[in-house]
Amino acid sequence: MSRSLAATLIDDAPSMTLAELARACRAREEQVQVWVVEGVLQPTGGAPQDWRFSGAALRRARLAISLSRDLEVNTPGIALALDLMEQIDALNAQLRRATVRG
Image (tube, rainbow, N blue to C red; front, side, top):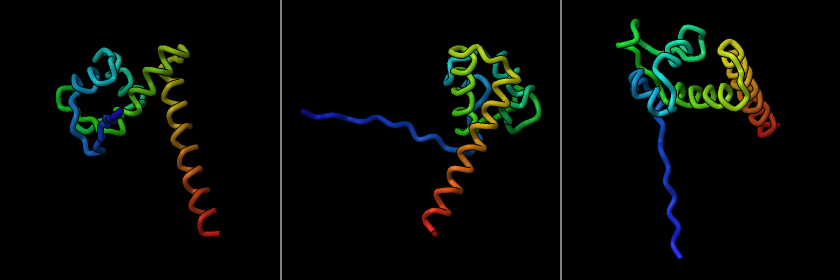
């Protein structure tokens, strides 16, 4: 019996448009725009038609969808939760590095 594994590599270089990001995370473009205004996502480019999002933004957007739909967290709460989750990840990575050296 053969099993195959499918994986998607996500590049952190800004490459997705607003429409592509919204489609990839199954959100409305208007919701993504609100997330940008509230600081959940930080695209490159000045105007929505010029925005480009990275793979990291896609990961954040997917987490934002989960927090919004599953836990009914509002947009400012999503921004705070995602920032805290990133800080926890950074601290855990720092702890792992310190443990390896020590």
